[in-house]
Image (cartoon, rainbow, N blue to C red; front, side):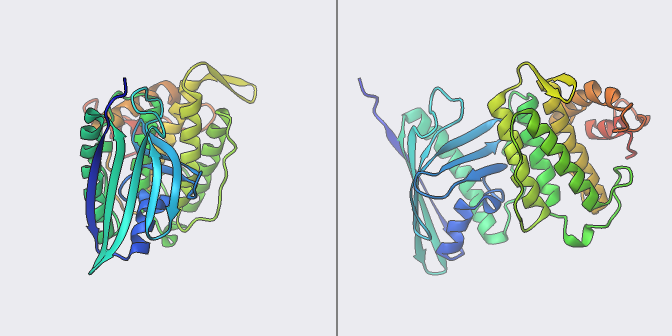
Length: 327
């Protein structure tokens, strides 16, 4: 017996040209401003995309039709889902020039009634963010990513990456030589250290990280971090990995990734006069990872002696103190 399917539809007016609207719904740098923490896009018929929409929830599918400035059609589903697998439904986005901007119309077909209701809730949320991004350039932090459901090392890494990327959007070339709280690193040196660690952690999951020319530090980190987070999502958290002559649990390797994102996000924020915003739940989860990783890493010089801090201090402050930094 064939299950009847229904359609979810959504429209939005964007005060930009159709070409700019097309960029907003297809380019990774623009998608990070309203829809995705991280994205991989091969924008051609037959090309694949992968969007980390919120921590631990990844949409994936194949582009079926791409007409720049006018229309895109792609398969839609969720990585690891038995209910709506990648490419199991179809999304069509059309762009119509109208006075003062562009009308964006989304039609999502091939859903059950329950799926249509849940996806329409999601499209309502993200189209509101799309409208803000079109008007202001950035929709700001996504509250849906603030406290991920069912935190584990992988979803917390997604959440910490989102926090780091919000800070990096405020880092400019003028900040390059500013000192950071991370020992003797300038902002530029800290960025290179971060790239090196991401390449190391990615290699533990079997990926050789690629770096290409990017317009900003945020874009460069996003490109590399997407590869690393995806590699670990594919590999999973089971078993051990080998780093040189040392073996470590896979969970520890991804724990290092969490610490790199959140602690260096704090370093970049302090160096550039920004405030790092992270939920207490995510900060506490990563603090607990730090308690298992940081003490053993002190001998190698990765961290200084822990700094005394009140037990009731916020989790981020306690993590910073555990790492040997002063708040």
